[in-house]
Every structure is written in structure tokens, then in C-alpha cells.
Amino acid sequence: MSVPAQRRFTFVAALTQAGIAVTGAVVRVTGSGLGCPTWPQCFPGSMVPTGAHDVPAYEQAIEFGNRLLTYVVTAAAVAVLLVVLRAGRRTSLKRYAWSLPLGTVVQAVLGGITVLTGLEWWTVALHLLVSTVLVWLAVQLHVGVGQPDTGQPHLTVPPPLRTLLAVATAVLAALMVAGTMVTGAGPHAGNSETPRLDLDIPALAQLHAELLVGYLGLLVGAYFAFKAVAAPRAVLRQWWILAAVVLAQGGIGVVQYFTGVPEALVAAHVAGACATTWAMAALWARTRVRTPLTEDLADRSPQLSPAAAH
Image: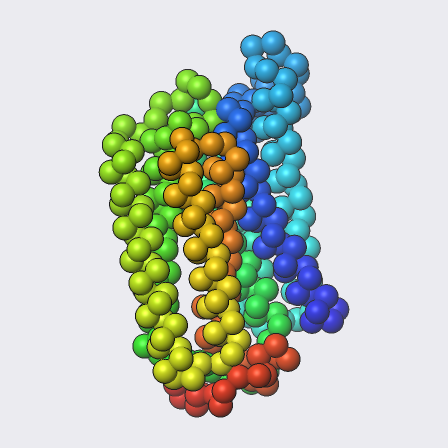
């Protein structure tokens, strides 16, 4: 299979990992989290909705529909694994490819735990956070398959800038954890009887906002550092994509907070979290490449020596 065809498979796999996080948010904001009140069955003795009168039909349909999407995500992940293995790609890509179906199985089990615990806020939070990790891994695979298996990997920016990006990624992770805590204390639990995180929402929102400011500061610093070292155009282009996504995501968060957390914006904010993860993962991947470069990376400044990678 050609490299462009492989990249189409990896793109779909990354998209499905992000997409099921968004549909999970739809389940939550519609109060359908217990539309199927047990797991792995939907109702005791039935794998499908039964039309039980104590659970509204629309809640059953939404939750069961989200469960069915797990099969789509699994199929995409398995397809990517088979494509990478059949193409005989390098070991690092095979590891990323294996992580997707295995991670999807873990996600399915976490989803079951979430239902069986009655949608405890920390299980819902963990469910989303694992999705962002899988999006990150899928993007590393997507970028990686576009680069040749031969040759030596090398950095396109000095090592200290990779460290700066690693710190920014850690802050982004903390930012997302804080966001799940805001959600855990907020009104959209997935079910009207689910207990919420008993912490002050304005204080959690303030922590979330401060981490965002810190993350933006690191991104701004990274941009000027990239310019100072004449980073490749592909890196700078990806930085601008990330900056646009982060600013849009911040805007959604502000509007969401001051408008009483409307359901549609909650789903949009989760989509924004996945998009931010995707853009940050792509930026990270663009700072370490293999030679000879693929066509989309060939328009960069003179590369650092391979020794810079060590």
C-alpha cells in the first residue's frame, strides 16, 4: 500500500478516536449516560435497548448509539494495525499502531466501569483523558508514516526547544485535567441523580484559566524561539495551526462559562480539547523527523546535524 493510502487510514483512526470523545460528551449533556444502565449488556439479559419505561427511549438510543460507535473506532484501529504490519513499517510505527486497538479495548472497559459506578465524575474524567492520549498516539502514527523508514532521525530544532515543547505538553495535560474537574463539579453529569465533585466551581474555573494562560505563554515563547533558530516552515506552519485552535478553544470556554454552560458548547469544548491535542501532537512530531524528508517537509531551512538528536 502506498504511503498516501497509509496516511488516509491513520487519519481516519485519529479522527474516530477524537470523534467518540465528542459523542461521549453528547451522551453526557443529554443526560443519557445511564440510557443503558449496565455493562457489557445494555439491560440485564439484553445487549440492546428494551424499551423499558423507567428509562426514556431517547436516552437508550443515544447511549446505545455511542456504544455502537466503539465498533467503528475498533475497526479503524485494527485496520491501521494491519496496514502498518503488512507494509513492514519500522518498529516505532508498529508500536503506535498496536497502541490504538489495545487502547480502544481499555477505553471500552473504562466505559463499562463508568456505567457500573453510576457515572462517578472521576471515571468520566479518566474516560476523556484516555481519549486524548489515544488521539496523541494516533497523530504520532499519522505523521510518522509519512516519513521514510530508512535513514537516521534528527531534530529540526535544538534540543532545548524540544524540552520547552515537552513542558508545554505537560502544562496542557494539567490544563485538561483541571477542565475535567470543572466538568465534574458542573451541571452536566450524564444523569440527574449522579453526585457531583464537591468543590467550588469558580475556584476550579480560575485554576483552569490560569493554566491556559501559562500554556499560552509557553507557546508564545516557543514561537519566538523557533524564529530565532530559523525553524523549518513546516514547524512554524504547525505552530500557527495550534495557536488558532487554542485561541478558538479558549473563546469557547469563556463563552461557555458566562452563558451557563449550554449543552452544545460543552460538546464543542470537548471537540476543541481533541483538536488542541491533535495540533500539539503534530507540532511535537514535526520537530523530529527522518531523512530523506517527505515532500511536505522538504521546504525547510538547513537541518541540524544528526548529532543534535542525542
